[in-house]
Image (cartoon, rainbow, N blue to C red; front, top):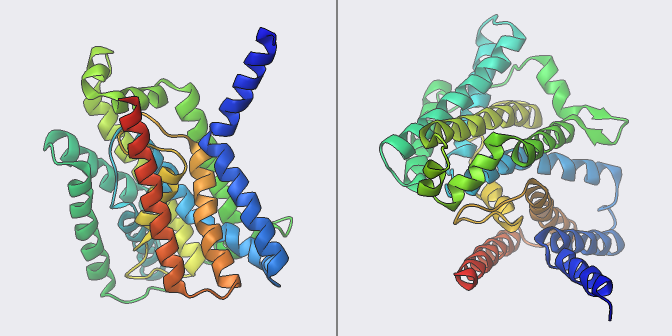
Length: 324
């Protein structure tokens, strides 16, 4: 057999071993099964609804991927998105603040909270999970205090329209925002020094310092950048729910982390891809959506998602041990 044939087969084998290929194959299989054996799965309404379900979790998962690449994790992402959503809603309902300023405030709230995460983790040396868990608890409390634990409605009509808007009658505006965010971060990670530096930090902080990377600045930047995406997710959350809830964003963090890990991001750091995260998000939401169409109990679906998360983390740890 010629070297060319061996090389070709080796490359083909590499493609089939990639996480992205496996996820895409599973997604296609589930999509076909749900389409054939349920009545409403392939309806325009359900497919549109599925993409909306993916959108908010998808934006949070993209942000989570950047943080996981550095070897960190952010439990506070859902709560921060909820705070951004509530801050914008209160401004729009109770003040005459310019619409675009309310959006900027929502994003600024996310950036500030993300920056605080970075400071606590780097300067106070608190482990990322503990630091962000603490911030999550604080932020959740703040949301309930400023809203009096009540749902806030009366949002600007443009936000309400965003939640219902679709391009060409097929692509929801929320899904388009998710796509734009995913493409932007994909390019950042692949082509910018900032993105490459995240992978180096994930390989080891000492290695990063020896490479001339300002680790403190990178920690501040990546958590603040993630906060910016949480702010965008908060705006999307308001559009999706058509209001701001005192519990807004709760539970999103687990789905976001799961989507990133299922997509191939390593909790040990140094590895992760946006394509994998997007596919992981679709798979997570597809399982829930298809399960509902099949009439499965929601608790069973929750159990299935949990098993999927445990399996993905265990597989990641097994890979790391094998490499070591």
